[in-house]
Structures are given as C-alpha cells and as structure tokens.
Image 1 (cartoon, rainbow over the protein chains, first blue to last red):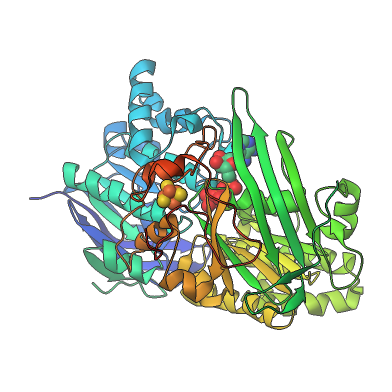
Image 2: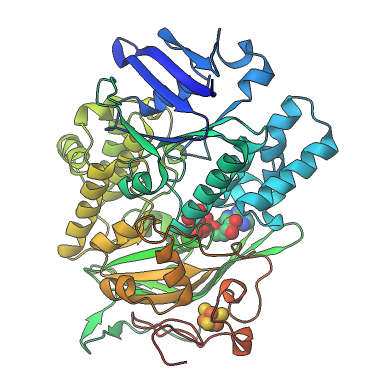
Length: 224
Length: 334
Ligand SMILES: Nc1ncnc2c1ncn2[C@@H]1O[C@H](COP(=O)(O)OP(=O)(O)OP(=O)(O)O)[C@@H](O)[C@H]1O
Ligand code: SF4
Ligand SMILES: [Mg+2]
C-alpha cells in the first residue's frame, strides 16, 4: 500500500457552530491535492487537523495506514515531524526574538540535533528557499513578510516531512517568489515522494499547481 | 533644503494638473550592527488627484518601507533623505520628511495621508472592539457621537464586513476580517491620499474585487490611492499606472495596459512571466542583497540582456509614467 495522510469523517465545532461535518480527505504520497471553498468553509481547520495540531470533535486521522491516537506532543516526535504545515501569515508563526537562522533550525533543536549539524542544515535550506546570507542573522522585524515566509518554508522542510500542507502559504507573495517557492516544494516532492495539500483562493495557481482539486462547500462536506 | 518640488506635472498628454504627492530622491537606509540596508534609493514619483498608482515588486524590494517613510513611521535605525511633498486639496502643502513628528501626528497621518498597514493583526489594539476603534477614529475626525455610530456601520458595509462583527475583539477576527477592519479604519478620516499596503491579503476573490473596486471608486471621486500589492491581477484591474520596484529603486513606471502588454524593463518581463497563468517561471537567480548592491544595475546578475555598460547606473527615470531605467530596454533595437 502506498502512503497517504487521510482524514476520516472529521467533525469540528467552534462554540456551537459546526465548521466541518464528517469530512473525508485523502492526500496520497506524491500527489498535490488542491482544496478550495468559500471563506469560512473550514479549509484551515481541516488543514490544522491533518497537521496534527488540532483534535477533531469526532473522526480521526491516519498516517500511512496507522490510526493516530492524539495530536501535538501526545504523539512521538518521529510521527509528528512527518507532517509539516505552512501558514499564510509568517509574522504570527515565528518567534520575534529568534534570528532567521534560529527560526529555521528551531524544530531541529527541539528534537535534540547537535548545534553544528542544525546550523549547517539551516543554511543549506536557506539557500534552497532563496534567502541570502545577510538575512539569516536578522530577526523577523528587520525582514519583509516575503523574506520571513521563505524562512518558514525552510523550517517546514527541516525534518524532511512526508506531507506538506500549504494553507494560503503564497497568498502574500509576489509572483516570482510564489513561483520560486512552488518550484522548491515541487522539487522537494519529486525527490522525497511527498504528498502536498494546497489550500488557495487563487484559481490560476490552483490550475497550475494542483494535480487534483477537492471542493469544500460552506458547512463542510466535500465532494471529491 | 534648496529645491522646491514643482506643484504640477506634465502628463503624457501635455496637460497640467496639480500633483497631490511629489516624491523626489527619496532614500532610506537602515543601520544594522555590521551593515547598511539600502531599502529605498533615489525614488522619484508623483501622484495626481484621481490617480490609482500600484507599486509592485519582489518581496523585500522596499515597498512597505516607502510607505512607512512617507508617514514618518520608520524605526530608529533608519535614515531618510530626499523630498516628499503632499499638496492636500484643502490646506497648506506639507513637507513630509521635514515637518516633524508633531505635525505628522496632528495633521497628516490618517487625516491627509492614510495607511492600510500590511500586517493587520499586529496593527489592532487588542483590548478594544472594532466598533470602539472605528468610532474613536471617526470622532477624532470631526464626527459627532451619534453620527459616528451610523458612520461606523456604513464603513463596515463599504469594506464588506458585517456590522455585527464590529463588536468582536481583534483576536476574535479571522485574518480576512482583521484586514477589512484596518481598511475601514484607514477610510474613516476620508484622506485625500491613501497608502494601501497589501489591502487584499487573506480575502477571497469576491472580497478582493470588492476592496479593489472600493479603492477605484475613491479615485473616481477625486481622491488618490497608492496601492502596494504583490497581486499583479489586482494592479491590472484597477490601477491607472503601475510602478515596478526592484532592489530599492523604481525600474519602470507606465500606464497599466502598456506595462502588462509590452513591459520594457527585463525585470518587469520576468515578473510577469512568473504568473501562474503565464509561464509560472520565477525570475532566475536569487533576490539581491540590499546590504551589498552593485554600483550599476542591480538586476544585472539575473538579466540575460546585461552587457558591460550595465555596470554603470542606468539613466534616471523621468518624473511621470513613461519609461524604464535600463540600458537595453525591451522593444528597442539593441
Ligand atoms: N527595521 C529594519 N532594519 C533593517 N532592515 C529592514 C528593516 N525593515 C525592513 N528592512 C529591510 O528593508 C527591505 C525592504 O523591506 P520592505 O518591508 O519594504 O519590503 P517589501 O517590498 O514591502 O516586501 P514584501 O512584499 O515582502 O512585503 C528588506 O530587504 C528588509 O529586509
Ligand atoms: S540595465 Fe542592463 S542589466 Fe539592468 S535590466 Fe537593463 S539590460 Fe538588464
Ligand atoms: Mg511589504
């Protein structure tokens, strides 16, 4: 059986409002699934459930056939790090006290990688995403939003995830940076056989990038 | 200061119109521990009443710094030189770079020159609801208490926000809702010139179009908007002219259709080729380091038209829309 990250019958409520209602979604290794739907249809919530950041109210996630018992730190690091997510706003997703080099290396340090190795891997990834060396010593406030998002992509790839979830991750980027990051992701995907989820409002980007598109209607029941 | 910026420009058709904003030689440097960041260099541009000017360019090229420089909002490690004059239709011209913080705070920011900031979530005061923020802004700009309440609802509707959502606190807003709220806050004082820095981030397509049309309508009634956007389709939809920035400089400023149909700067052509509906090919090479720019054209390392002469700076661009700063512009015989 080939690997897949799968959401089974996921239901999520915020307060009394149900944002996802028994949703199924499958991301197979090597494919790029586009997920679209109106504002508020629960695309980001579904992405967070698949990223193992949020427990659903009912339903479950399987990773390469294995049913996952929980989320976040209740999962062993070796499982957790197989899925990475990239959000729309890099400001909200980075610690303002860290240099960009440390932002990228942070997940390695969290799993106990030796300092030198972490540093070498961070600068290799920085180059891959197009961050010039002068930016690595700076903190988030001294770089632009687009430069910070490049650092977030490098951080997302640091543990070589098998699944990468991009939630409007290039929505705030200029065309060239967007095409560059898309090429970085696609190249990574080809080399590692990774599965990619692409959440975007941009129809041209969806048409160009996704290999298959799933619609999530308001109220959260998808039609494949 | 020895020179005074002219109060009129000659447009492509030779007509004279008063300018609203006149920027000449604007330069911004940031001092960091061991280096200097060249964030904006010798930038010239004018904005006329009724004009919607879009500024586009690669991430990190200096677009937001340009907006913050005009508003006196840069951090302490920044040095700003050059000229920037605002000629509000009512009232005295303002020397934006020289008039001082007091005058900027009291008479300029918000009132004469508005800003929709790029990171809305961090721009909102967390302990006040949207309604309270909006009504305070309206009352600071000559609305009575009663009038402010209705005006707040109207502004919410204008930006595509449900007035009921004004009663939420900033942390209860989605990214797109926060974006619409900061846009409403910037529109509240009805400034003659609005600097909108990525005002459509986080919005879905119908709301993007709604916001763009709102900015367009402002210009059609005589106000002006400087729209900073990474979204080339957005620029194309509403802008009269588009200015392309690369490595801290403006490299091409042209009427919108002309720029999209026949770009003349190689960087503009590369940026357009990166669109997913065109080649989806990034501009080759890495973006430049603003701490270490070459003396000549900064695009040379990525440019397939570069020759020896590109090691010298291309001639400066004229004030108004029309040309590009390049030794070998596209479409010209080599
Ligand atoms: N406080 C600061 N100190 C040093 N450098 C800074 C500071 N703020 C911004 N910069 C640098 O100035 C340059 C211009 O930044 P700016 O935020 O204007 O980019 P931008 O064109 O708006 O990019 P984006 O499209 O990603 O928003 C960038 O290279 C950035 O790293
Ligand atoms: S000046 Fe030379 S290097 Fe610069 S864009 Fe023009 S041709 Fe290319
Ligand atoms: Mg910016």
